[in-house]
Length: 295
Image 1 (cartoon, one colour):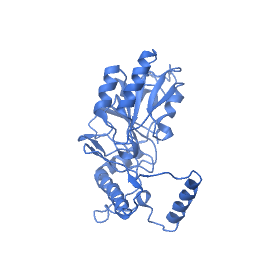
Image 2 (cartoon, rainbow, N blue to C red):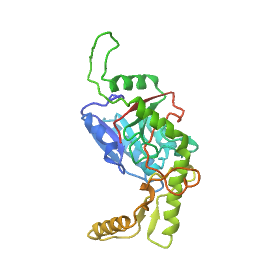
Image 3 (cartoon, rainbow, N blue to C red):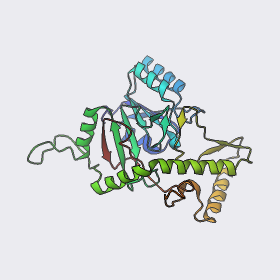
Image 4 (tube, one colour):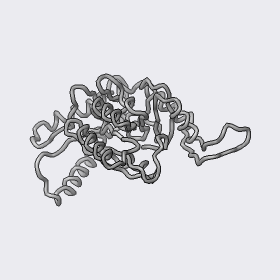
């Protein structure tokens, strides 16, 4: 909405992501066009993005925006993506819902697009129980976001509304809960990374496992410990494998890896992370606007 997406438009979006990345496109009556991933990051492929933009230009139907997702806490390769989108004049929305505390070439996740989106959902690095934060260097975009998120009320003494608005405000209490957790953000990132390393060491003998890569220019927050299984797996076996993993997890209460909760004292912070959501003003953006929508 802030970038002028309307019915009949197209918006490019990462193919490997949660549905919440693409749902807002459909809310606006636009059409999502999914761009494939690259094996080095599991995120949007710059080569596939450029191919899609070239085709869009030749067809006379350029996208209104490109939504780039930082999957499972791993940043996309933004240098080529930013260059490509700039060359074609298409703004980027960075979906950093899972990547609070991650870095791309020493730059914080969520700071590469015209807009960045973080999640404070209950399963993220820090949490306000739900909701999230919108960040941008563009004061006009943030001002418009605040206006629309507070019922689009005009600055008049009486109640006056000229456009449709939304009740997307976050309460001061919940915002305070989130701000307080920023003090331990790096501890929680280290805890998630420790969980990932524990899985990788513990399953080192399983030759078919391929862990989510972390390029040398990146520092993932390892929000989710993820791997792929090398080689073919018969389709009928997949549900059985999922059931077996779920049964094993249920048989070991309190040892469910990156989804367990624990205290964050300095003594045990590296062993298990707490559940958490995401936010971030410390990403050095000029302005931000809290809102409880994206989870």
